[in-house]
Image 1 (cartoon, one colour):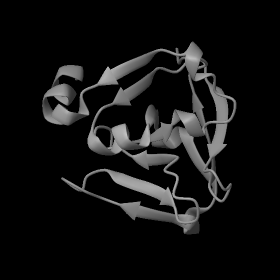
Image 2 (cartoon, one colour; image 1 turned 60 degrees about the horizontal axis):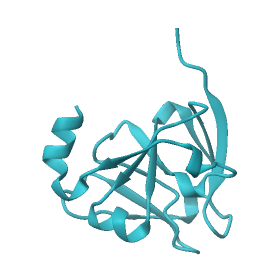
Image 3 (cartoon, one colour; image 1 turned 120 degrees about the vertical axis):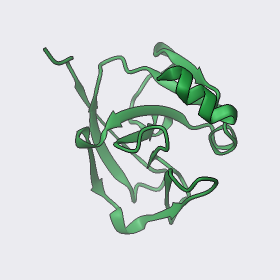
Image 4 (tube, helix red, strand yellow; image 1 turned 90 degrees about the horizontal axis):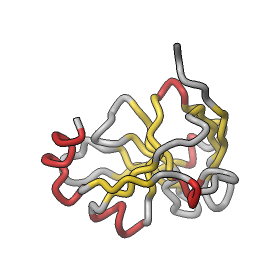
Amino acid sequence: MSEPTVQYSGGCHCGAIRFEFDASPAPELSDCNCSICRMSGFLHLVVPKERFRLKQGSADLIEYRFNTGAARHLFCRHCGIKSFYVPRSNPDGISVHARCVDGLDIARLTIRAFDGRNWDAAHAERG
């Protein structure tokens, strides 16, 4: 039996990027302390790729890779917001920035810390 899902939508600041995805009615978020997540305030809501749909703006995305190059950080070329990306920890998923999801009440959700500064150990511990 599969868990129930809700359809969410969101996008970047200027509206050039719009997406929708299906996730739990009360998704768990992850707060990573790696350099890029800490500096941007990114709150992760990871979904399988097949549950994510980019509705507009594919030509407006620019990519940035650093360190191992495994993560595909995708930014709007107009406003600079990273509303989602392909994470190193879950290359078959999409990490949506919870703060870019329309109407999502973050204060009501569980936020779990992830020690991205010590990524290898934290990822092994998380399983």
